Length: 279
Image 1 (cartoon, one colour):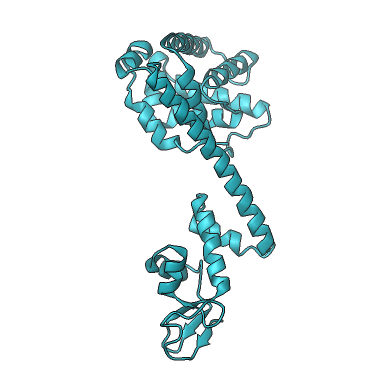
Image 2: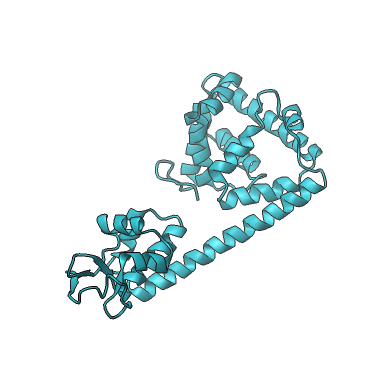
């Protein structure tokens, strides 16, 4: 139930939090967000002001401001508003537990950002020393089907992940000769995968599981690829028409077969392919 503030003009003029509370304008200014945002959070039930003036204006108490700050922390960490509401309204979690959880999540994010900063520094150093590949060198090494803008697309999709930071750091250390060797190994592996598919190798067999591990090891040259991540990549090979076309050009049905090989190998190691997420 909201508390009515009856002194005319006190909260409208911006009373102090903890006495009459703060109007929506002063609350928004205090926490650095817009009045429109606070109105929206009120509408969706995320942060409802605990008081109203005699004229019906919203009034935010000290507890309301504390909740706003908690929302902002979780929002900065990438939580959706619905997820934040569930976390904050969980009766099993007290205020002290919220603070411990937020601190832990912030430390994790700081660690990821620091890793990304180090990776960017290494890429900058590599660029200064001429170690990175030009678009022409990329096409020369990876073939005419390669599109240099794929790297930019990947950065937009995974740029904030720890795996992307790892990729940048490792890529900065590679010379053109390293990339040529990797490209040759990748093409050889794809040829073996195609041959296995043509030869009727069944997903889940020892031979297929060995190929799945080699596929994961190939990816792990760029970043530490877990089996769950490999399952996600296997899905992408089928769901992204560009990947599917590339594999199926080597051998009809190869993309789906490779996905099933990866799924069977993951399941053999206790990973449920139907429920994994990128982790």
